[in-house]
Length: 305
Image 1: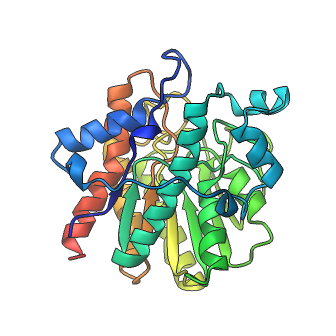
Image 2: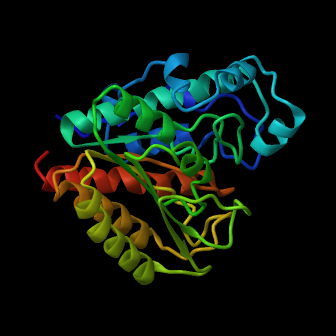
């Protein structure tokens, strides 16, 4: 059995090449993982579209309908920052389905990784920050309400606070939201996660990794979750266009490996999503995102999964 990796060709639809959001990074990440010998195209697991009734566990049904029909208000379009198309709408719902499949595979095998996901700025009834539907919130509600798990913990290491996730799950006691983010960064108005860990601009590898270890050494034994949803955003990298932290490639790899080992050493299944990452050098960005999957493969082998 190989490490479960989830991907679909819908993830990189045709998109303006000069847009700030690097829509082609998902395809380039797939290519990088194949070219580096980590996987083959045949080994990648393809998800189904996420059904509307599952999306509606975390989102207003009227908002789902408005988005899918291309009927967002001008204000919502401004908040989102992405041009609507049928292909993008399909991609969005497919990617939530991909995160659901990743969660199911993590529960089955202990570890699984998505080649997308981490849309943590999407709110209950409006989009924001390039995020349309919040896969982390959808997964949490689906697994909790279906009785698959009794408690989930979201460990969000994207450089930006997971404000949408925090607000959607604010009244869901068994979904623990943890956001480790750059304090002076988007969004300007922060939400209240169960645990917010703001970091100063310029934080580097050593300090960051100490915070990760301290947080997980406390949170995992305290909450004893049945599944950890890990948002492995690489916008913490020193070369990211929107980040303001100073992690190196080695620091990102050490972070990813540490998070996965913290969970698995406590027999807690963990799934990884790629989160944010922004660069005009799309090949370099794809390699940066691939650090998660290479770290996961290393852990998968060493833990004998």
